[in-house]
Image 1 (cartoon, helix red, strand yellow):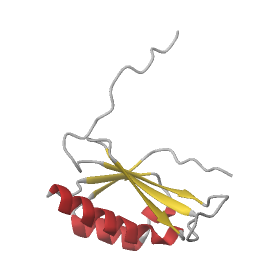
Image 2 (tube, rainbow, N blue to C red; image 1 turned 90 degrees about the vertical axis):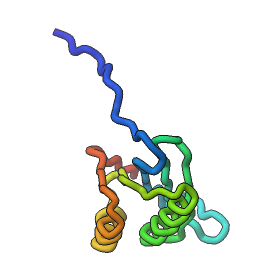
Image 3 (cartoon, rainbow, N blue to C red; image 1 turned 180 degrees about the vertical axis):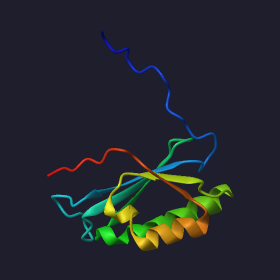
Image 4 (cartoon, helix red, strand yellow; image 1 turned 135 degrees about the vertical axis):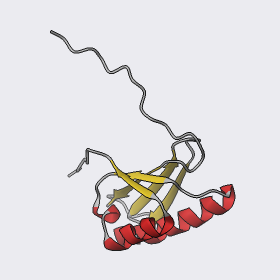
Length: 117
């Protein structure tokens, strides 16, 4: 017996800022000018527009999230509804949890987390 290929479509956001995908990448082998070793991405699921923030330290992720949130909410006049990320430590801190609860953002986590050595 063979299994049929997956034919369903994943659930997509129905409006701007309905779902934001985020990930932190780094440490990069080569430092960028300014000492940046990491970058943080935010991608709107509805419009597929992405933002990239350079960081010197992974711990800057929360501040970059605040910066991103303020920027896009002011531009669109809407609030972020959900933030989807892997289960990286930068998304599991107490401060991160407090911020998203305070802002009414639903935190979603992917079921798989890749580790590159």
